[in-house]
Length: 264
Image (cartoon, rainbow, N blue to C red; front, side, top):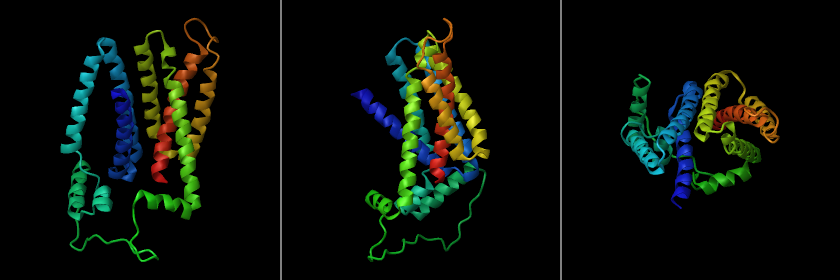
């Protein structure tokens, strides 16, 4: 039960970090920031493989994870500012928004100057005479009002589902990369780290849609190539090579879809 709750909270945390990143990082730095954040994921995978190899006791591994979690809590509450977009649109606190923007300005060595006439303005009333609501229900109603937007969102959901399907297809096969399970996960982490390094360059110059399309086709091809496990010699098989290359390419899919989603 505890591991189930931990797994659920883990993906909530990933989503929260992603949303926070796209709200506080300036547009020209977003591709670089996204690459760095995802590269840190791969570095963490390498470290946990090393820790698990050196420490053959699950309890001590959990203790190390708790210490890292405590460091994250300190950074969240005492170092990183609250998202200005959240403060402005949800909390409607103008002073808190200014303070948050000033803290972000310190990160980028910039000084923000606010005029005296800045104020919060309520959105215009709708035709029915009530204010426009920002609730989840009203957002769902927008899908009915704007079918083109609904089709785009559904397409994004399908792409996310496919990328996740491919990712777990590869990750569940990482044990095939070698006889040593820890070494296998470390090798997969190196492949992902390479992918996120390349992603930082590709996202600056290439079309997100075509980048995601090409990498999805390539990753799917390598996933099917993993099926005939017997092709190859005793040391290296086609399945092992396909798993490593496919996992690396699929990481590029995640990066391009991440960037594409927030730009839409």
